[in-house]
Amino acid sequence: MTRTRKHKGVTRRELLKAAGAAALGGVLLSTAPGRRALAHEEEGAADLEIHMGEMYFQLHKVNGEEVQAEKNAPITIRAGQRHLIRFENVGVVPHEVHFGRVPDLKARLYKENLFGLGDGTSPTLGFLGLHLLPGESATLHVWIPESKRGEWEIGCFMPGHYEAGQRAPFIVE
Ligand SMILES: [Cu+2]
Image (cartoon, rainbow, N blue to C red; front, side):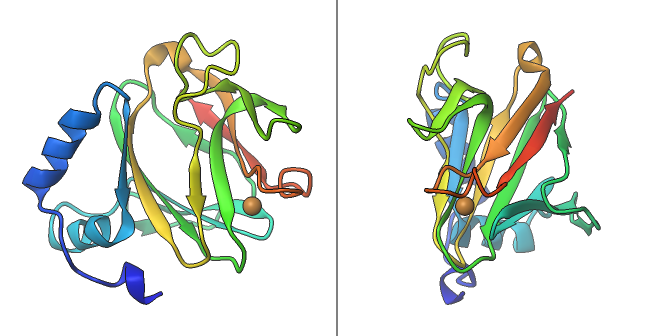
């Protein structure tokens, strides 16, 4: 998609400034064009690149290297350090990515939200997830605390998608 190819942009300095501003929330969401420019011009790709489509998540690259992963296979990430996780919707309909466990299919969210507020034992809301149109991508800048180690999940809560199997284990180790 042309909108992800533009090299307009966000400088590293601006990104760090934004990261500082977002630190309280724990999550920085940067839109694709700026992030892609960074990936090309500065310090390499996101540590994890994940494709999403009908009806799956699929690990595409780790540290810039392409990997051969099954659709909806477990994805592992380390706690206690910063990560850039890039999601790209390679499908033909909108998809979402939520991080959590214990799905609530009525409310269309995880009852335990990995990036939620509070201790995560109830739907504490906060950051719910990404919503990407076909061809869109976004990079999350995250630092998962060590207290969140364990088995989580990423899932799409667009109507019918989770039910159709669009979910993958997300292991924080
Ligand atoms: Cu979906």
